[in-house]
Amino acid sequence: MENYIEQKVALAVQYFKNGYNCSQSVFMAFADDFGVDKTMAAKISASFGGGIGRMREVCGAVCGMAMCAGFISPADDPSDKAARTANYALVQEFAEKFRAENGDIICRRLLGLPDDTCPCPEPSARNAEFYKKRPCVEYVAYAARLVAEKMSSGRV
Image (cartoon, rainbow, N blue to C red):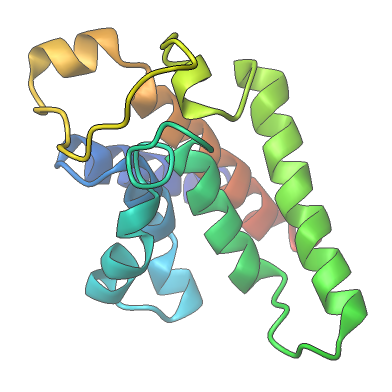
């Protein structure tokens, strides 16, 4: 099980270092577990990077965890209130653990940006300076670890 967790964390980090955004990196690391092909996973999660469309709102890694929660604890029947409740509880559990470890779930605050940061849709260049000043890879790793731990525990 520990090997599974470390493999998923490493895969998410690899995706991020290969240029995928934070949300894509987390969700894509688990796509095979959910029966979703890599290309589809990248498309589904693309818009959630940079705090949702680079608006610096909810961290993309947290959004990636929330997408994974939809497969771990599905709520695909609108009449199944218990399933929706379980799904929301899992999302909240992930978010609270992430917040407890990292101090927040809001992208701009995690990055130390002012609240009035103007959203720019252009992605940052992925270079040595980016990786040196941005803690995003650690957030991706932590989010992937939380999902992998939940997946390997068998308890939802």
